[in-house]
Image (cartoon, rainbow, N blue to C red; front, side):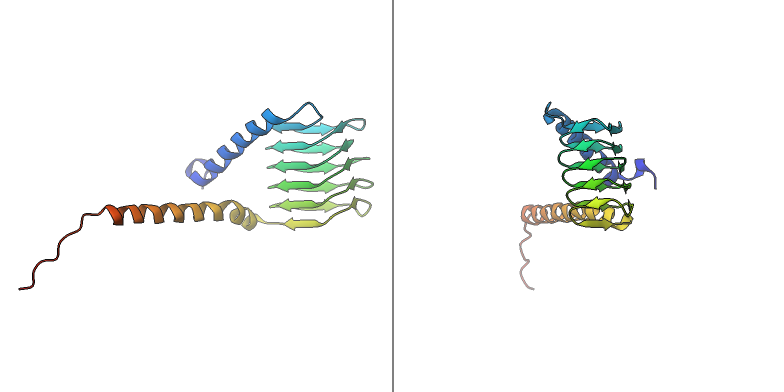
Length: 170
């Protein structure tokens, strides 16, 4: 099934695009980095506050003070890279090389975690690997919304249907 033949997927991609525009509009000059479709690299001598990426990947060699969030891409923490908060990835992978540190949680939905034994994680590690999780996370709310709309349409049709009087018994 192609992209053009899947309306829920087009709706989801459209929603993520609008969300990206909103996130980019509110990103402040405080070191936040938000990108759509362009990879983000935090160099060895660089620091960022909050990193968000839609449809791209994040490479951390420096320091991210708070969270790294990626939709449809991967996170690579290498060298002396540090993440002060959580690393969260939807539909992508996380790779943590030797001597890197993530102070918070590492969470991956629909991807894999590749972790070197020398990588330090301060919080929990959660991995929902496989496409079934993406279908549940994105598809179940759409199914519930469709069922709710069908219920409303059924109720409106039932309440606005003209009543037919009962015919007299013969």
